[in-house]
Image 1 (cartoon, rainbow, N blue to C red):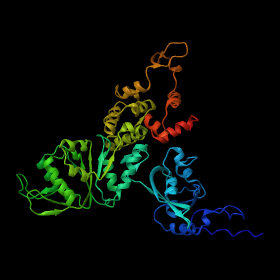
Image 2: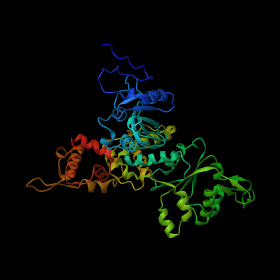
Image 3: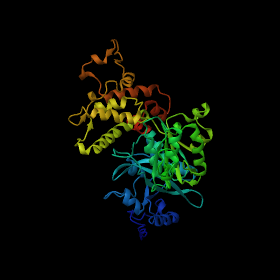
Amino acid sequence: MDTPPARPPAHTAAHPPARPPGSPADPRDAPQVQALISFLDHEAQPMIVLDPAYNILAANTAYQRQFGTAGRPDVGQKCYRVSHHYEQPCDLAGEHCPMKKAHDMKAPDRVLHIHHTPRGPEHVDVELRPILDVDRQVVAYVERLVTVRSASARPSAEGLVGRSAAFNAALEAVQRVGASSLPVLLLGESGTGKELFARAVHEASPRAGGPFVVVDCSGLTDTLFESELFGYERGAFTGATMRKKGLVETADGGTLFLDEIGDVPLPMQVKLLRLIETGTFRRVGSVETQQADFRLVAATHKPLAQMVTDGGFRQDLYYRISAFPITLPPLRERRDDIPVLIDSILRRGTAAARGQLRQPMSVDAAAVERLQAHDWPGNIRELRNVLERARLYADDGIVRADHLPDTLGRERRLSVHPATSPAPAGGPAIATSDRPASTRLGRAERESAELRALLQTFGGSRRELAAHLGMSERTLYRRLKALGLD
């Protein structure tokens, strides 16, 4: 019997041998899929084609260049194994998988994931589009992948760093709004990295090649705020010996970042509203109207909605700047990020002090545990200060627990691990501090025992349990899997 002819190669991807007669239809035989594979190889963005069973059918040249690994063909592999090193689909591993929603809605779905790449873990913006046949049944999917350059999932000497669920949610919001022209309002406690997130909005926008101008609104009087923002003419006031361009003009074609906008004086809020609504302003001492072209990003740690109610902030201005609010998570909601933040902060400190011959630093496990136990009311700024202080005591280049402030994390340690252990059957309670070190449970064993005990009484979902424990759902899934409880 003659064997069916082998399918010609679609592009750079490897292809399996022709299927024998009577075998199930290969999705690549669908005319729509074949035409799509040929088309995608000319696209500049990395793309892959998937079948409904998560198998990678094809990968274009751009994908092979950016995400391919020499000697390991991705075609024929499950997408979740390649991207996440999982043994099951993402939604079963505590992540949002766009395939289910794209299948049910017969429409695209988009999500921010951390993918394993030849360079290590990276934030990747994933868009999945279903391919439908004449009966509107899904025959395949096209996945477009865009690496997020403004944030790192690994220690980095610059920019945003993190990989926790709370951090990724904020970063995904930045990617969503970046390509638009909507004003963005960043909300969050002091020290949560508002300026870095504002810069990420700028870098995700079509204005990324333009200027990014920061205006610190705190502590400025009415007159000083106006002259800094709008500039002034020569002779406008005493000391104005020449015309000065304002920050609004400097931001032309780029992004204007108003940091701590809640501190803008009420009289100036009227002029700021006019600037935002009409894109026009006047220099101090001038009657000539100037035109401004900028993208607005504002930030504050103050409760602006409450300030509107109390009369401290104009309602019309509030609604104008809050078209797309993004709440930045405090560090206590990102405890999984603390190790990578520690490495990043120490790298930045070393890089900034190269002229001082500062040696590379590291932090031992006990010190990391204490740093993760603290609630960080000052957020990343407080963490940086603590590490810079500890660095001065680490003569051998290793920050240890005794180099940290005595009060750091004490309250959380007492609440999570009380000084008294449960009493054994028929015996008195044992004070932890009185136990010999050799008889204490190791940290991993203790946490495993606590998690098993909590599972017996907790009645919520896995997501609710992760929130209760202050960790991401993915981290909880891995711990449950390690215990055989997934």
